[in-house]
Amino acid sequence: MNEALISRTGRHLRSWATGRPLAGGTAGGGSATVVLEDAAQLPAVLASDVVGPRTLVLVPGDQDGEEHGPSGATVVGFEGSLSEPGGDASIGGAIFLQVQDYGTSPYMSLLGTTLVRVAGEPDFEAFLADADRARGTGEFEAFAVSPAVQIADLGALGEAAPDDGPGTRLWVAADGAVSVSPQGTRLGTAGDSAADLSAAWTAATAAAPSVALGRAVPEAVRGPAVAERPWLGRYLAALDMLRDLQVHGVSDVRISGFGGRLAAELADVSGAYDAQDPAVPFLAWTPQAAYVRVPGHERTFRLGGRAARTAERLLVHGDPASAADGADGAAVRQVLDFFAERGAPLLPATADAPAEVGV
Image (tube, rainbow, N blue to C red; front, top):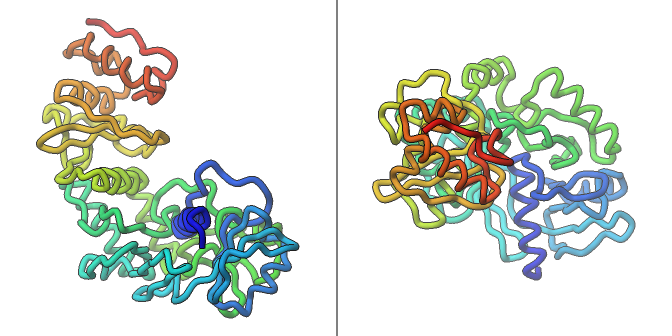
């Protein structure tokens, strides 16, 4: 495998595991990524319209990224298992992946890139307990914030996932059953059309939104638990930020709104603007510095102490006037200007020009 194919395969594999679409999207019909448990299902898959020029198919065996002529799909072989907790897989001798269930992950050594799956109710309960603890105390599980870890099937765990579905990913089991993930509700059979699978997805999500975990966690368990925690999407996004900071050598990090605030006087503000929505920027800090991450932007901004506290006021109150009440209005304007000028507005109302605030 050449470097370009290795990079492309890595992106597709992450998208397939999480349910997040490929960054930038991919034009064309069919599914972006299809993973097969058994190569015996490959002919049926390649003969259907679920694959096309944008599709990367991962299949057990020796395929080395060859293009399937009629469909234009790229077929890549792998060894091992991409589905079974406790297993591992290698792709082209360049990508190595461990698969673990969520419940045992805190006790396992991370030897490399690790996909963590919720494979049953005990795993789901452990995930919720970790999320609750992070929300209440600011303490995040060490394995969950490791840059080597990716948690699977995020839409079923509370992340808004409007683009998950057969157009983003498919899993084909050894018996030909098709879903979006190994733990997912069956949508059809290998060889079914893209339209049929899409219709089955629509019907299944209308009945029970957790299609990706439909065979692992009953909706009667999952649904109420997620509904009681409307902030789970923000928790999952916070894990992303913590992993990214670790990649850049930043550790011992606290995140505003999880167990406290940088400015202690903001801790008791009810109905905080940044309490639930994962699209609202994050403020994090260490004993040495503070950082702001604006979702949808690649950059994380480092701030000094005064600017960080001002940014936190804006994120807690949600509008410049409230943030400036009892504070330094000039400092509020300066922070708003800083982010707006860099194309990463801290608040939506300041996307074009910072709002006027009193001094």
